[in-house]
Image (cartoon, one colour):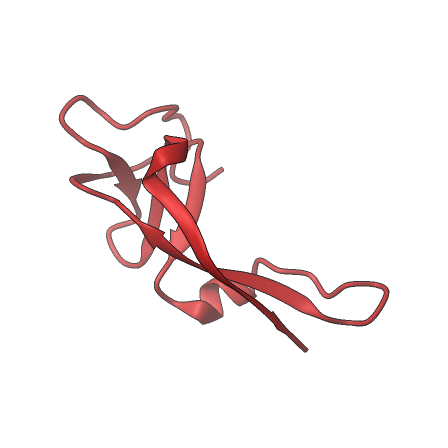
Length: 82
């Protein structure tokens, strides 16, 4: 937990790749492509459980967004790769 509690998303696939592990069974990795509603995003910190009042998500200010509600994102594709 770096930018608060929640679901982490990145527009940078290499960042997301670095947070996957290959399957011990076949070496495949999985990554979701998702539609994410970030709304107004505040700079996050590891102590945040929800964004500040008036904000919908937290961010590192670059490419990481953290959502805090289940209705803010849905997966559109599952990518399986080696």
